[in-house]
Image (cartoon, rainbow, N blue to C red; front, top):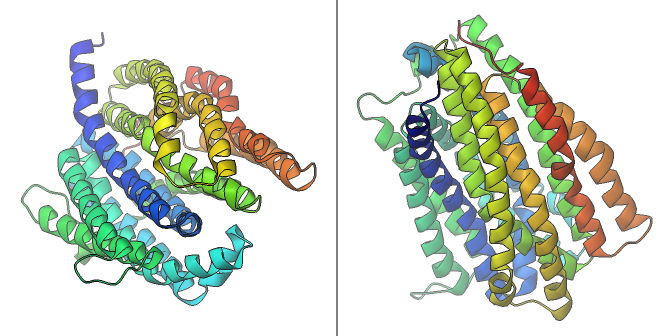
Length: 446
């Protein structure tokens, strides 16, 4: 039988720090948008488009850290610390290579990258200046994400949340200083946002290294960095490759949505940028529950308690609907505050109001799918389903409709935005059927 009191206590203990960590990370984008929005609409829009490069990078990093979290949660439930060190090594190698490649692209080809998301020359120029500086933070992010992932799966979630929160506070403070020009420092606007992001990432990595040096923390076994057991590496890749496919499908798809809206005019791009910030902030709650679901289910399955893991998964699936309806109410409640909080043209303000209404319904599907797919199913190693669902719902339905609406039928930006929200809602029945097949109830440890 499920001990409800113990279950909810454990869920809250894990989910709250992760939700806080997710919230703090989303606040960076929110503060960038709000502060730059007080400077000029074009500055805010350019930075919002430029950060899509990091969004794509995070898709690669997320596939590696998610695979590490899936295996790590099960091996932690089993009590195998040496396997966790080897998993840490694999993540470091993968994330290090990805970070170097994105850093080089931002330093040497920023105009090409910005040209993907915008046609306006001023947007490309401002965004390119941002990327040349922010590219240094992309070099560091991959390493710190590996440390934060291991802290999460080894139940050091409070330490991880504290590190992320400290980095965000540092980012916000330096944002204000460099964007607006304080204490004798010149006003740097978009370039100031890039400098503050880079400083925050350096501080985040330093804190990760300092805290992980304490006893009982899992650290990478650098002497064994290139001596990873073949079986464990293959297990990692078996989880990582479907996750990477799913992350890339989702990430490139979301980036395509931004690019489509970016080519529908500055007003549509500006409204979409603000709506995206609100979406990421509200999603923090379901991100925390989703990550906690993967850890809780993975711990039980790795420890061999398959039936209990199965019951936990079903309970978490039901909770995801409650989180979805709460998120819908939050989006509708904050709409007047958000619309009045930034400087927009009248047309952009009208777009933003209706985008928020459309997004409120989208939040139900987003929450259900985040908790159920990225939490419950991934916790048991059923990572291939996410890829299937994204190919069908996003790439065969939502993106073609949005492209045709924008460039063939010339629909209004609001109709095109509604097309970009179809995929999450459309997946819900398919996800419920997948859960009932119980392919995710598996022990992945050796």
